[in-house]
Image 1 (tube, rainbow, N blue to C red):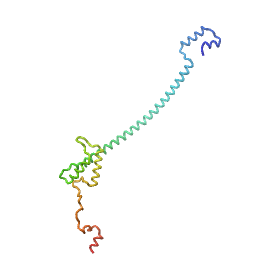
Image 2: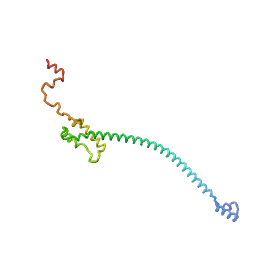
Image 3: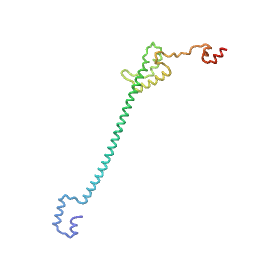
Amino acid sequence: MDLKALFAKHSVESAELLADIQSSLDSSDMIPNSRFKQVIKERNELRADMAEKDSNIETLKAEKELLATDINGLTKIKTMWESEETKRTAKIKTDWEDKSKIFDIENTDKRFDKVSEMKDSFVFAAEGEELTPEQMKANLEKMAFLEKAKVFDTSEEAPDYDKGKGKRDKDSRFKGKNPYVNMMKKK
């Protein structure tokens, strides 16, 4: 409401009084009621917003602590896994180094032809390089298959592949094999 209208309503017609009041209102630090309510509303909204953000900060701090413990646990697991992986890789490497010695045999060895024939199916490192663990593992799997099939033996003597394939006489196949057959022959 306007100050002049307020004075007119109460039948006060002192222009001098009206000017004094208007100048004191203009020069004072007083805030109009509508502006005061608006400022209070904004302040309350900011306080509520700040309280919500403080609550979010506490929640995030708790989550951070949980994540830190999870990270520590995962770091320990990762370290253990890397240690086991290093051990597995070292074992694969030593196994391959032991098994690959068969390819270094001399040409006077009985197994030389078979070994040199099979050498092409294996992967070998180039000069100054190393095989990857996957390549060594694949080589070991091939070697295990060939050893199981007795293509070549890693022992000092080569197996006798022709053993038992010689000529036999007619009766040698029955000797000592079946006691009933032996009894029949005696009669």
